[in-house]
View 1 (cartoon, rainbow, N blue to C red):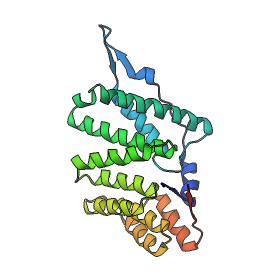
View 2: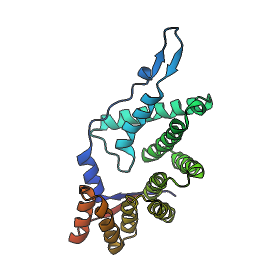
View 3: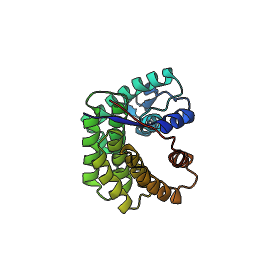
Length: 227
């Protein structure tokens, strides 16, 4: 069974950072040239996924209101169908290498966000999508770190740790934060402090990390889990 782990401090922080969600306008993504031929604005669709990702990449979701959350859930379903259609029609295969890689990453992110919205089967799709990405890009540290984020947020701590450690070896210093969160989920605050301090050596202005470290030192941090 998959769990979602919640750091109580993260919940407070994500809510405080929430900004109004910018709704996705699918009709605006459909373009026609002078001859009437219709095309899809791929860049616009990528931007829409990025907007959703800023609010729903982690659990708990960071939306300013319930109406934003409901609209985002609907937009996510529309984007999922749009990406599936583009892939089925072979349109994604015609993109250049960089755009095709971002297409695949965006689809993995869609599945991750669906998991965070409690959509059945999304976690398995996200897992498969990230593994496929890494099969073709094994030396991409950021994808390893992002996959680690998903795995940790899904309660797959051993697998997440492996991905974060690989990301670190490939130069992704932000993976220290992921390893710190795994330590917290395992109730090991000494381990968490060590990784947080390493993380803050490179990201000194990260208020969230400093607040977690401060809460550990004060003994006020709580970890909860949602089934």
